[in-house]
Each structure stands twice: as structure tokens, then as C-alpha cells.
Length: 439
Ligand SMILES: Cc1cc2nc3c(=O)[nH]c(=O)nc-3n(C[C@H](O)[C@H](O)[C@H](O)COP(=O)(O)OP(=O)(O)OC[C@H]3O[C@@H](n4cnc5c(N)ncnc54)[C@H](O)[C@@H]3O)c2cc1C
Image 1 (tube, protein in one colour):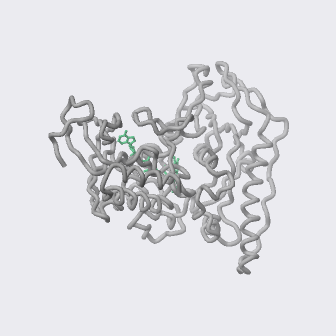
Image 2 (cartoon, protein in one colour):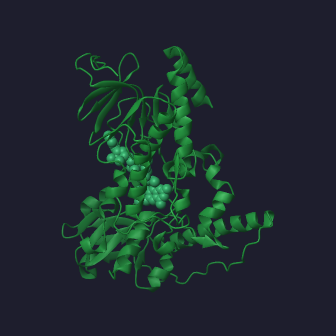
Image 3 (tube, protein in one colour):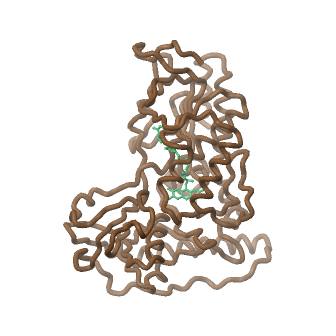
């Protein structure tokens, strides 16, 4: 590391020059660090808050994993607790990440925000941070695939008398003021937050969108365990029928709460939760919904049942002994759907937005983005030699943005980074990059 080099513009002293800088100290950044350390590649991680910050600050109090504990397979640190089929709660997840860091002592600087990433004329990366400028030969962006909760601009038309909250700011029912609550979005977070409020005895209204669902268990096992046995989690994105479009798909809703169970919105409706179709428009305290509640519930169930059919076929083809199980029968049907609602007489005083997440890469000034602002890459390798991403949803497989698949991607990138570090000239490094992108 040297401290007397200058950044690309030749104006400012740099605080350090590293072979590799990793941006983000969540599970992806730590996994990358572990794999580089194993290979003896010098590096530094910048984390703007604390390591594992998203799990600490952006989840609600009763949060627990949706994926079983045995899927926590960080490189060199697989889950070793006594409840592999259970679902860790928020504090246990944070403890798992802290223990991971403890196990290999990554070189991390917490409380340091990367404010700008650019390249100088020599192709080196200029990493501007809240504590100074650094140079890096290679950079891994591991800032998470679920960075900024999306809020549609119709939210601006909501009456000021109604509080608005992002799903990442929701902590628990006791912190929501009095009155009824409307949750917009029925993906994993929306359904779980609606259920959390419902269990606490709050009157909940839920706008149901097109997210699919899955059963928690089927024929004697967790559905995740069946899919694992069937090799689904090893399937690379180019073998998925939707190819790269799968990255934009909502996750299936199901929960790990109380040891894991289904989320059946129809059942919640029989218990008093009020369901609507997709939220279409807002005018003051008036909300308008699409007439698609039945279609969305039917479609979510159809996906859950089609997963069961795939499992049945697998069981038959392998002559596996597994108990037979009745298929799902809808316990409630929407009749006379509500298409308009005035929040005032309905006493709805809070709206929680849970319609998905976006990313904010405005601080990256390297031309690697596609027309939608998504970083173009092959297995995390971008078109800018030496710049990588890790932890993106479906970066390579289903588990890329999760605990289960990040190890495979980090290992791949670490091998790649090590090979590139050892190539003799910038030209051969460029060729290596082209080879990777063509693969
Ligand atoms: C609600 C929700 C539930 C989930 N449930 C599961 C589950 O059950 N099982 C599962 O396997 N996965 C789950 N995931 C997916 C995934 O495991 C998490 O999103 C996880 O946090 C991803 O880890 P990461 O390291 O890629 O990103 P993050 O954990 O988001 O880490 C990124 C880090 O980068 C830092 N950072 C960002 N920008 C900068 C910057 N400019 N400079 C410095 N640092 C920066 C952030 O502070 C953060 O700590 C869930 C995700 C969400 C949103």
C-alpha cells in the first residue's frame, strides 16, 4: 500500500492503494473478503455503517429467515447451530454474521461511506470515501440487491393526515400509531408485515399484487429441501426459462415464523384481514384498486400447486418413499370486490409501502450500466476490467442474493480476481475479461 500516489485527476493525495477494495460489509462483502484472504489477496472493505447493517436496521423486530438455517452456507462458515431446519430470528442472524467476521478477522473499515467510484486514465479505480480517496486495482461492489424500498409516485397524492412508512422502516405493531393499517404489496415482506400486525390484533388492509406463493412443507419435507434435492438451487440463470428476466420477479411468499408455515391470505381474510387488488390510484384519502384480487390469489395458489406437482414428479421418478398429501383447497373467495375506499371513514391512519426494492448506483461513474440502470455483467464480472458485483439477486443462481449461493459466486470471483492480479500486462488482463464475458 502506498500513500503518496495521486488520484486520476492528479489533484489530491490518496489515502491508500490496494490490490482490491470491497464496498459493503454485509454477508456478500464478508464472503468476498474470506475468499480473497484464503488466496492471500490483499484487500480492504469499506462499510458505511456496521457489518451486517441491513439485517440490524432494515428488518422488523419479529423478522426471521424464510430460508431454513441449513441454507446459511457462508464460505468457510456453514450454519452449525442445533436447529438446521429452523429459521433464525433477526438477532441470531446478526450474531451469525458477527461470528463469521470474528472467525477470520476481515480487514474492514466500518463507518466509511464510498461516495464515488471512478477510473483514472491508467484504468485504476478511484474510490472516494467519507475519509479520503483510495486507489484500487480491482473493486467488488457488494452493496446489496435490496437497497432502496420502492415507493410509487402516487404516494405523493396521499392525504397528509395519513402516515406513510417504508417496509424497511417498519419495526413492529406497537410503533404504529392507532387506527387501521393498509399494507401495499404482497411479496415476502408485505405479507409478513401484514401478518405481524394481524397477529398483534391490528385491523389490516392488504393490497394484493402478483407475487407468487409457495407451501412451506409438502409430502414430509420443507419445499426448500425438495428443491435442493432436485438441483433447483444449482441451476444457473442461463438455464432458467425466464433467463435474465427472472431477476425482476417477486419472491414467493411463505414464512419461517413459529417454526415455519404457509402464508395463506385467504385464511387471513376469514380471520378479518381485508384484501384488495393492486393499488391503482390515490386521491387524498381515496384509494382505487384494480379488479384483480381473485386473479392474483388464484395465480399465487397456482404457482404453489405447480411446485407441488414438480415435487410429485420428482418423487415418482426416483421412487422415493414420501407420505401422500392432500392438495390445497381455497378456504375463501373474494366476492363483490371493493374497488374504491375512503381511508377516513375506514379509520386507516397508516400506509406501509412494500412494493419491492431498487438500487442506487448513482455514485458509480464507470459506464457499465444497461438502459435500466442495472450493471451489465456475467457472473458478476462487468465490462470494465477489474470491476465486479457480488450479492445481486440471481447474479448466477437462485441463491446468489441469499445466504445459500453467495459462497459459490464469491469463490468464482476470488479465483478470477487472483488470476487477473497475476496476469502480466493490462492487455492480457483485458483479454481475460473478454474471455469471461464471452463465457
Ligand atoms: C426483507 C428481506 C428478507 C430476506 N430474507 C432472506 C432469507 O430469509 N434468506 C436469505 O438467504 N436471504 C434473505 N434475504 C436476501 C439477502 O440475504 C439479504 O438481502 C442480505 O442482506 C444480502 O446481503 P448483502 O451483503 O448482499 O447486502 P446487504 O446486507 O444489504 O449489505 C450491503 C452493505 O453495503 C453497505 N453499503 C451500501 N452502500 C455503501 C457505500 N456506498 N459505501 C459503503 N458501504 C455501503 C450497507 O451499509 C450494507 O451493510 C432477504 C432480503 C430482504 C430485503
